[in-house]
Image 1 (cartoon, one colour):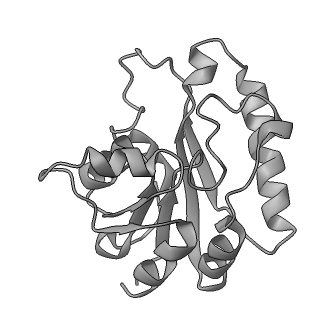
Image 2 (cartoon, one colour):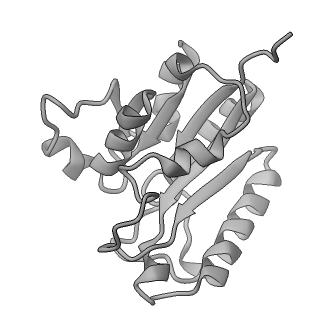
Amino acid sequence: MSKPARKVVFIDRDGVINVDLWKYVEKWREFKFEKSAFEALKKLTDKGFDIFIISNQAGVGDGVFTEAVMWEIHEKMVAALAKRGIVIRGARFCTHAKKARCDCRKPKTQLLEKAVAGINFDKNRTFFVGDKLSDLAAGKNFGVKTVLVRTGYGKESEKKLTRALRPDHIVDDLNAAVPFILSA
Protein backbone atom coordinates (compact mmCIF):
# COMPACT_ATOMS: atom_id res chain seq x y z
CA MET A 1 0.00 0.00 0.00
CA SER A 2 1.53 3.32 -1.06
CA LYS A 3 1.52 6.43 1.07
CA PRO A 4 -0.87 9.21 0.04
CA ALA A 5 0.62 11.92 -2.15
CA ARG A 6 1.98 14.91 -0.25
CA LYS A 7 1.06 18.46 -1.25
CA VAL A 8 4.27 20.23 -2.20
CA VAL A 9 5.14 23.83 -2.99
CA PHE A 10 8.62 25.06 -3.87
CA ILE A 11 9.26 28.71 -3.09
CA ASP A 12 12.21 30.89 -3.98
CA ARG A 13 13.50 32.96 -1.06
CA ASP A 14 14.88 36.36 -2.08
CA GLY A 15 12.19 38.51 -3.67
CA VAL A 16 9.38 36.13 -2.73
CA ILE A 17 9.61 35.40 1.01
CA ASN A 18 11.91 38.30 1.82
CA VAL A 19 12.45 41.69 0.24
CA ASP A 20 15.09 41.51 -2.46
CA LEU A 21 17.76 44.09 -1.71
CA TRP A 22 19.03 43.97 -5.31
CA LYS A 23 22.22 42.66 -3.72
CA TYR A 24 23.02 39.67 -1.52
CA VAL A 25 21.44 39.38 1.93
CA GLU A 26 24.70 39.18 3.84
CA LYS A 27 23.47 39.52 7.44
CA TRP A 28 20.29 38.67 9.34
CA ARG A 29 19.66 42.35 10.11
CA GLU A 30 19.32 42.94 6.34
CA PHE A 31 16.62 40.27 6.03
CA LYS A 32 13.10 41.75 5.82
CA PHE A 33 10.03 39.64 5.14
CA GLU A 34 7.77 40.56 2.22
CA LYS A 35 4.48 41.96 3.53
CA SER A 36 2.43 38.99 2.36
CA ALA A 37 4.85 36.21 3.33
CA PHE A 38 3.56 35.39 6.81
CA GLU A 39 -0.10 35.18 5.79
CA ALA A 40 0.65 33.16 2.66
CA LEU A 41 2.98 30.68 4.33
CA LYS A 42 0.58 30.22 7.25
CA LYS A 43 -2.28 29.39 4.86
CA LEU A 44 -0.11 26.85 3.04
CA THR A 45 1.03 25.30 6.33
CA ASP A 46 -2.55 25.12 7.59
CA LYS A 47 -3.65 23.39 4.37
CA GLY A 48 -0.98 20.71 4.83
CA PHE A 49 1.54 21.74 2.20
CA ASP A 50 5.16 20.69 2.46
CA ILE A 51 6.98 23.98 1.85
CA PHE A 52 10.48 23.75 0.39
CA ILE A 53 12.68 26.78 -0.13
CA ILE A 54 14.74 26.51 -3.30
CA SER A 55 17.30 29.27 -3.72
CA ASN A 56 20.45 30.13 -5.61
CA GLN A 57 22.85 31.69 -3.09
CA ALA A 58 25.83 32.51 -5.29
CA GLY A 59 27.12 34.96 -2.67
CA VAL A 60 28.77 31.96 -1.01
CA GLY A 61 30.56 30.81 -4.15
CA ASP A 62 31.39 34.39 -5.12
CA GLY A 63 33.05 34.88 -1.71
CA VAL A 64 30.66 37.60 -0.47
CA PHE A 65 29.54 35.64 2.61
CA THR A 66 30.17 32.19 4.05
CA GLU A 67 27.94 29.14 3.92
CA ALA A 68 27.72 29.35 7.73
CA VAL A 69 26.27 32.88 7.43
CA MET A 70 23.79 31.68 4.80
CA TRP A 71 22.59 28.91 7.13
CA GLU A 72 22.44 31.32 10.09
CA ILE A 73 20.11 33.60 8.11
CA HIS A 74 18.04 30.59 7.07
CA GLU A 75 17.72 29.25 10.62
CA LYS A 76 16.68 32.66 11.95
CA MET A 77 14.10 32.96 9.16
CA VAL A 78 12.72 29.49 9.93
CA ALA A 79 12.56 30.34 13.66
CA ALA A 80 10.69 33.60 12.95
CA LEU A 81 8.22 31.68 10.77
CA ALA A 82 7.81 28.90 13.36
CA LYS A 83 6.78 31.50 15.96
CA ARG A 84 3.80 32.17 13.69
CA GLY A 85 2.93 28.50 13.25
CA ILE A 86 4.57 28.19 9.84
CA VAL A 87 6.46 25.00 9.01
CA ILE A 88 9.23 24.91 6.41
CA ARG A 89 9.74 21.26 5.46
CA GLY A 90 13.17 21.84 4.00
CA ALA A 91 15.48 24.04 1.99
CA ARG A 92 17.98 23.46 -0.76
CA PHE A 93 20.53 26.04 -1.80
CA CYS A 94 22.96 26.26 -4.70
CA THR A 95 26.02 27.89 -3.16
CA HIS A 96 28.16 27.80 -6.28
CA ALA A 97 29.41 30.96 -7.97
CA LYS A 98 27.19 32.47 -10.66
CA LYS A 99 29.53 31.32 -13.40
CA ALA A 100 29.98 27.78 -12.06
CA ARG A 101 28.77 24.97 -14.26
CA CYS A 102 27.11 23.03 -11.48
CA ASP A 103 24.08 20.76 -11.69
CA CYS A 104 22.16 22.49 -8.93
CA ARG A 105 21.85 26.14 -9.96
CA LYS A 106 18.37 27.01 -11.13
CA PRO A 107 17.11 26.62 -13.84
CA LYS A 108 18.50 23.10 -13.40
CA THR A 109 16.39 20.81 -11.23
CA GLN A 110 18.79 19.07 -8.86
CA LEU A 111 17.70 21.18 -5.86
CA LEU A 112 14.07 20.23 -6.42
CA GLU A 113 14.93 16.58 -6.95
CA LYS A 114 16.90 16.44 -3.71
CA ALA A 115 14.21 18.31 -1.76
CA VAL A 116 11.54 15.71 -2.53
CA ALA A 117 13.69 12.58 -2.66
CA GLY A 118 11.68 9.77 -1.09
CA ILE A 119 8.44 11.78 -0.93
CA ASN A 120 5.33 10.60 -2.72
CA PHE A 121 3.85 13.68 -4.42
CA ASP A 122 1.89 14.53 -7.55
CA LYS A 123 3.78 16.82 -9.93
CA ASN A 124 0.48 17.89 -11.48
CA ARG A 125 -0.54 19.41 -8.12
CA THR A 126 2.89 20.82 -7.23
CA PHE A 127 3.99 24.43 -7.67
CA PHE A 128 7.12 26.53 -7.91
CA VAL A 129 6.65 30.17 -6.89
CA GLY A 130 9.38 32.59 -7.84
CA ASP A 131 10.26 36.05 -9.09
CA LYS A 132 12.89 35.19 -11.71
CA LEU A 133 12.91 33.47 -15.06
CA SER A 134 15.30 30.88 -13.62
CA ASP A 135 12.62 29.94 -11.05
CA LEU A 136 10.02 29.49 -13.79
CA ALA A 137 12.43 27.49 -15.93
CA ALA A 138 13.37 25.23 -13.00
CA GLY A 139 9.70 24.55 -12.30
CA LYS A 140 8.95 23.88 -15.96
CA ASN A 141 12.04 21.68 -16.29
CA PHE A 142 10.90 19.68 -13.26
CA GLY A 143 7.37 19.35 -14.64
CA VAL A 144 5.44 21.34 -12.02
CA LYS A 145 3.14 24.35 -12.24
CA THR A 146 4.79 27.75 -12.00
CA VAL A 147 3.72 31.05 -10.48
CA LEU A 148 5.50 34.35 -11.07
CA VAL A 149 5.19 36.95 -8.31
CA ARG A 150 5.70 40.63 -9.11
CA THR A 151 7.73 41.22 -5.94
CA GLY A 152 11.53 41.19 -6.09
CA TYR A 153 12.62 40.88 -9.71
CA GLY A 154 9.14 39.75 -10.75
CA LYS A 155 8.06 42.90 -12.60
CA GLU A 156 11.30 42.85 -14.59
CA SER A 157 10.95 39.12 -15.24
CA GLU A 158 7.39 39.60 -16.47
CA LYS A 159 8.67 41.94 -19.20
CA LYS A 160 11.08 39.22 -20.38
CA LEU A 161 8.63 36.32 -20.63
CA THR A 162 8.64 34.41 -23.88
CA ARG A 163 6.11 32.13 -25.48
CA ALA A 164 8.23 29.15 -24.41
CA LEU A 165 8.66 30.41 -20.86
CA ARG A 166 5.30 31.50 -19.50
CA PRO A 167 4.18 30.77 -15.96
CA ASP A 168 0.88 29.08 -15.24
CA HIS A 169 -0.12 32.13 -13.22
CA ILE A 170 1.15 35.67 -12.52
CA VAL A 171 0.28 37.41 -9.26
CA ASP A 172 1.30 40.49 -7.29
CA ASP A 173 2.78 38.65 -4.29
CA LEU A 174 3.05 35.32 -2.50
CA ASN A 175 -0.30 35.67 -0.77
CA ALA A 176 -2.02 36.24 -4.11
CA ALA A 177 -0.55 32.92 -5.31
CA VAL A 178 -2.23 30.93 -2.54
CA PRO A 179 -5.77 30.72 -4.03
CA PHE A 180 -4.30 29.40 -7.30
CA ILE A 181 -2.24 26.82 -5.41
CA LEU A 182 -5.19 25.73 -3.29
CA SER A 183 -7.46 25.38 -6.33
CA ALA A 184 -5.35 22.60 -7.88
